[in-house]
Image (tube, rainbow, N blue to C red):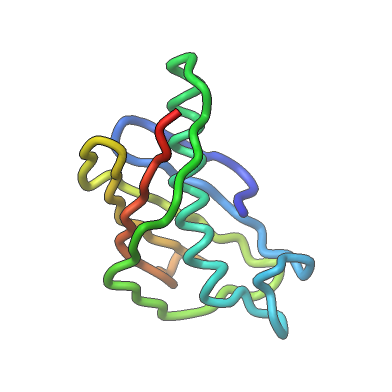
Length: 121
């Protein structure tokens, strides 16, 4: 659900996604709300995988535990590129709390906070 990993560090990660007609979350030419939430979650997953690989560790499976304060102000269209950024707000044991923001054509189209659980190996 992402096209490119643009950047990643200890506190944030940015990805891009080109919205295509073949995307499972595209309906009538629009990238629908579940796709926006999944894109934020996949950006967090890309970060976790990237950090695990840097540390020489296996990539672990994660799950969305909760979504809070979801605000969607627009739906990207087919052939739009969206930029997603997640920021780590807190990390306790196997739980990471992130804030996610998605931009399309330089305007914020979605924001939320997610609680993500990582299944220990």
